Image (cartoon, rainbow, N blue to C red; front, side, top):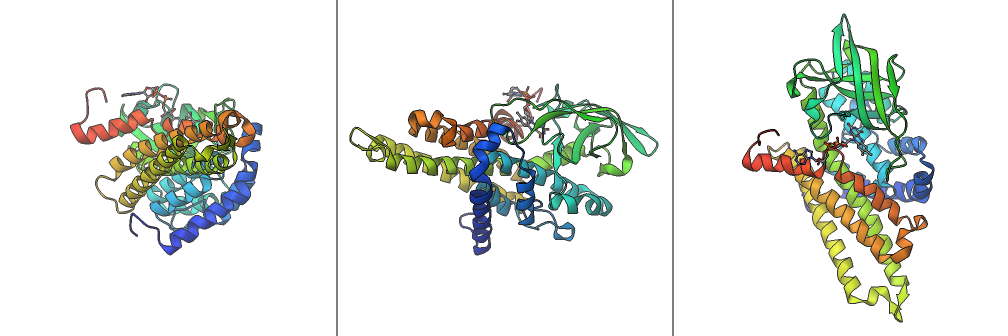
Length: 384
Ligand SMILES: Cc1cc2nc3c(=O)[nH]c(=O)nc-3n(C[C@H](O)[C@H](O)[C@H](O)COP(=O)(O)OP(=O)(O)OC[C@H]3O[C@@H](n4cnc5c(N)ncnc54)[C@H](O)[C@@H]3O)c2cc1C
């Protein structure tokens, strides 16, 4: 691979994902947002095309592709609906955590149904009192014979209530990151319940709910890796997750830019097409340029993660911030180009703006991305 052009295979994968997004997601995206509909059947169709386990090994049904391939796929999917693409990205992140750190038995137990999306997965790290400072999490898992007993609450969990598999970061030891382990909790386990579906600004085509554990007994056999490496697993998952969410921002923004280009060439004001005004042309030129710069940087970070370079985590944090900030700004400018019509739901632009806003907050806020980069420059500050 080169970081600056796609191979023929990557172009074919992109075209496949873009075709799927245009035919299966885009026509329904505004309605799904309005109706808060989580399109599980359509996601299973995406999985049938290999998008349920993109960078999962193929012996358990994965596609065995690279992080760069995944970035290309998530950008393409998001041109149809960033919310659905972003949920598929979280699902892929959870599956990868099991693929990378799970035993052979766990891989064969959980991954075939995750790759086909017969089962959906949720990533459970955030708690009411532990967001950016995730290592302060308090959900307890106490060993009792061959089970852990879980008590605590996870907050803002994407897919919660519908997902079959919950990849949960719990405290099994001392305070801080080294006391955290990762446990898979299966839907239907007694003591597992969910809060109400949150009312949100965007991302309405997927549920966001609290996940509650009350005396919830989970077999020790469901622990992923040894005790004490759960925080490492969670952060490793997020390296790829951040690339994917950045790609979702770029794809959503590209969709908005394409709509704005079309609109600017049709809409007339002062006796001319608005696309004929140089102020607007320069705005469009800047939007396309910023987006291309973000995309190129994201691909560079994805290539670094594929090659496991020592600076890969830092590059993923940098690229997440740039891609999600740029994506939001470009989508917002696309709304501006639509004038008052951009503010109306039917045009599909305001939905993209609402959807992309949260990418600046989740999978680590963009302030946390700056913290990660700053630590690599000046070391860890006191209290961080
Ligand atoms: C729609 C949605 C879906 C989500 N899905 C999931 C999911 O599936 N799984 C999951 O585990 N979590 C999920 N999250 C949670 C998300 O990851 C957190 O909201 C995010 O990490 C921020 O945590 P917080 O909301 O507690 O904010 P806080 O950590 O309380 O931060 C508040 C503000 O302070 C800033 N801040 C905090 N510390 C510092 C610092 N040291 N320096 C400078 N600024 C700082 C933050 O950047 C932010 O602006 C989701 C959130 C939303 C909104």
